[in-house]
Image (cartoon, rainbow, N blue to C red; front, side, top):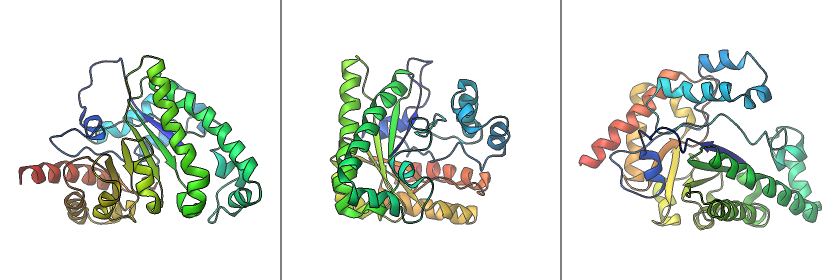
Length: 301
């Protein structure tokens, strides 16, 4: 699991609440859009800023995080800003998968071996991580984040049985605990998004896990996803990130089809995963503009 915050609260009055209204299931004039990894290496200004200091120093510098957060918003009319931080700052590398694997893997075999051979220890580790993650997320809201997204980046490696046993209970618990602690602190609730990559087999369960928004990767058909989750949650996604390698004209056509499939209500546009470092910023701009243009036309018709 990973987590990010989208912010601010108690700051100057919000100029654009379209994303938040869509997350809560309210009507919007157009479909809001943001991109996972929108503050990323595809932007030359991001690479220049990041070159000045190492990753963890950057994460600990409010000034650097603010600059990286705002860079994509200076280029594109995005509807959300991602606070530049990462769950890598809870344990220094990410959560359970990489703690056990020791790095990236195409199979996650060592982490899954733990689940099969050491189920009790696996649950113990996942509980420790959950108990660290909850105050971290609440702290982000206290500091101004207005929405939270939780990632289960390796749902597809688990499959239904392992997912239901080792992931879903903690996904549910994070949402339950964060909401309870915000109430106890007298803070307004914030919408929470769950994004389980390749977790198409668990959409129904995720829709009932306590999150306002369910994120989809590009392998899920929008209409089938809506059938699975019903009408009580907002969907987010799910253009194939590699579609941004297409021409700007084709990007527009793909976006139009995606918007038609999702419909205008309870929907936030995004990619089905994060932006890649070699992507053309102009094509990212074409994606954002196409969402705004076609979603307005969709509502007029």
